[in-house]
Length: 112
Length: 113
Image (cartoon, rainbow over all chains, first blue to last red; front, side, top):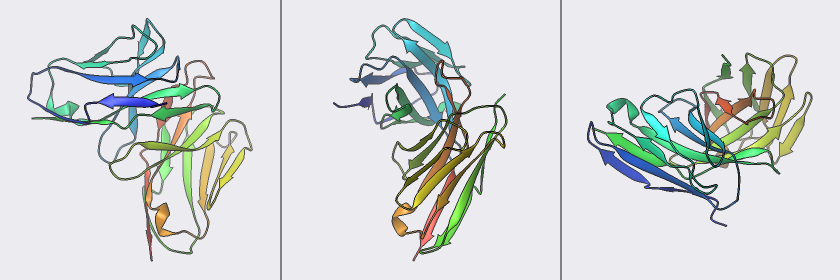
């Protein structure tokens, strides 16, 4: 099992551009999450999903959109990128047996 | 709004010493998690604490949960350099419905020879 994979690993965007951060899991987990991590801060929840077709906002959803058409994929869309969106983005799934969230390797995004 | 506070935020300690990291949270919850993050890496799950009085130990780390005091501790025994990392606590107040986590800011631990 690959677990949780994220692409790209690193990206530079210009202000106003858009992009999609990809997250894929092969563990058949229903619950998936997107977090952002700013320097010296903990993680903040952007959006989450409890299953295919169901998504909901987290703590900091402004400027982002998500979709969940399949169990495996949970892409995060940035429209009109802003410098404030410079961050490291982590995707995670919830492992029901081990009762904890498992995180992908992260995507580092720089908006200039 | 759930607030999760860790202290200290920075901890420099010598090898062989003991220390405790504290995690306080503001609303009722009986699900608390500890994660470790190495520089430039993802988060690694350390402990899952799911009830009042829960205690978990792995190597030189021991975590406990007091839900009445809304406090969890991560105790480090006889620290070694390999424990240098950032440690996060996270609280789930969803009651087991959607498992959303609220994180503390993290404790940057540096263990010096």
